[in-house]
Image 1 (cartoon, rainbow, N blue to C red):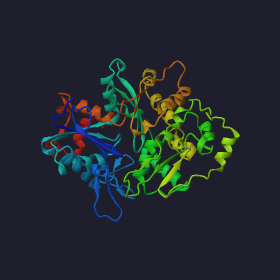
Image 2 (tube, helix red, strand yellow):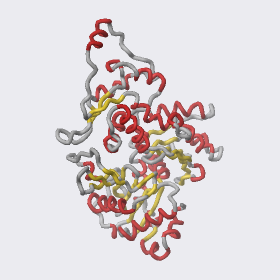
Image 3 (tube, one colour):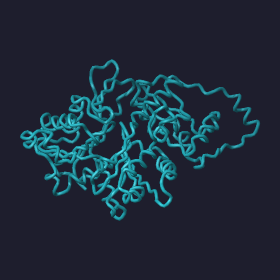
Image 4 (cartoon, rainbow, N blue to C red):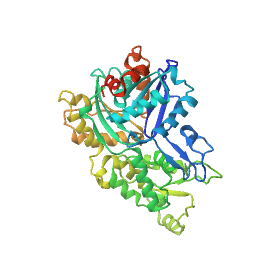
Length: 429
């Protein structure tokens, strides 16, 4: 697929913003949806400028336009959109339509603020708004038509700010059945920051670096008690132990995993969590004991059980003092809120979307947690997307390429004549 439809598709995530053209397979830009200022500098870096190879993200002050899934800073959002639309996409909004992926249950005041930004500040000629679950369903249904003959699915979107389990029927999200957890990638990063700061280095101001460490090193455990026992072993026998090097601002500007082979040792463990320790001879043991504990430099930290305890939040938030149901229970509640005839079909079509579903073993663990909660005569099938971060954007690209797309939009003149609230009725919000 190639672009040129004149429709800009914007998936405005709390962590990453995905932007490109209707009809394209992939977005032109996937950039952080924030601004950041290095220590001692007065210049704010916006979106893609944070991804430059020569930029050291240590100690940066962050400003995000979105908090808990909703727009809280219109000024920062305008700066990010201006950068993406004019510099990266090189588009004149006056001649373009916009398809915007908006958070579910967006309050009217924020819908109005968004419309103001789109029409009055950026000057787009028309706007269409869609929610992520319906677009993810649309994209997966286009890829696997035989699987989606029933025209319904349950989209589990583990995003930056929170997690939604949303039943979708014939490309419409059934809002009355949507269930939400106030947990997402941001909460996981914050928890990892706290664990590292308590155990080794103070990294409470290093959001971007710890985000990177989380994405590269964390995984989902299939046997938490067994893995906790393994995590107590000494360095050589501990399959989870690995180091992450922080930038020093001179030799390297980006953080990185010290030894990738060491970091991947856990993946060779049996799925049932049995220990795979090799029996070492007494002489080997004494040699090991003679060695001094490896000294850590000032700019590195070691992770062991943190690697699986952080994603564990999604499955058992109650263990961390959060009075919320886990992901499996959240899914079951969403499906049980639907008509009984839909329920078995939804359990067979659970689609995973959002960056927090990318942790290794996420799908297997979710299936393991779901099975005891689902009636025995129902099948459970979880569909892991090819790229869960881009699912909603790709669905938007398909929608924007449809011949009847312009009829779904509100135009700038309609907005000026009728105002935001009356125009929005077209989007069934």
